[in-house]
Length: 400
Image (cartoon, rainbow, N blue to C red):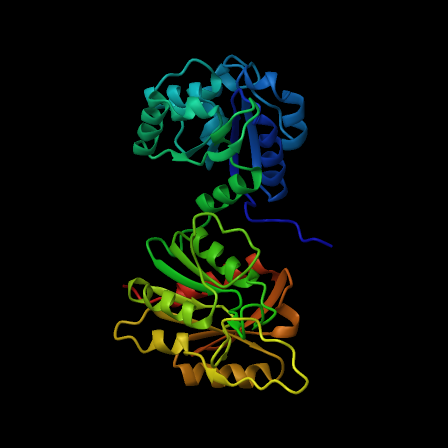
């Protein structure tokens, strides 16, 4: 049975809809927000009601939808004040070109624009419009002003549009917007920190079509990167080959071999406050890998293997090393091997798990080893475990 999401439990969000075909995505966004435990209040412009009905949004949010400045359900007919006062965030999705222009110039001629002007909480907008409207100089001036005014502008993306044209202007997908909401409302335990994370497997070529790799899916490392950016960090993810989408707000560097990963990490480690080595790095590479396909022969094929660099060890040895966290995937004697690895590496924290229970799975259990002893993070979705790990690390970080 799938665990319910609880990232936004207790959070109060106002979801605003303006006119545009992308309003159908707002229905899915509302569903995701509610599923995650958020209290969602929907406010729609009259144009938005032409694309999605208030009844649909009420069914998804579980709350009455407001569309009218003078709605008698709001005390003193002051919806533009009352509706935003208990909110942690306002997100307008879709945000039309017209609505962006209103926000940039302080105009307030309907309920949604007025409550955005009268708000005390953060505001995010997800633009959605035709490519020519997005590229127009006036829209770009308005967007620049919104960013100057500390309004988060989420997207847009490029792609096919409902009008039949192609280009920038597509509203981000509901899942992407949901991730931005989670990031914006998460406790900022790593605010201002630079975090470097490795994830996924490495691949060591034997020839041009064959290689040595492992079963790592990269899911745990990607979850750690996501949890770190949620905590307010600037995150760089150095990743081996995976099929995973890039976590929102994370800079990703793609690599193939362990030596590629080493070079990418060492080029960035001195700027990092925190290094979390989650990747399942191959211990060996093939000596004399062939630049062509090796043909099948009648006898055995002998392959010579040489040690790969110890990436975590090199980072720890830096004169001004970041705070280092290691990962150990064992198949037996978990605590014995993990403690030995932590002592050998000389790192303050090591997270260990059983490889056969974690590789490829969507959930995980970790045991953390530090100078204070062992700390068990029970089996849960990997993003939940990653958030618990980041909270533990944040409490250990030296002030720097």
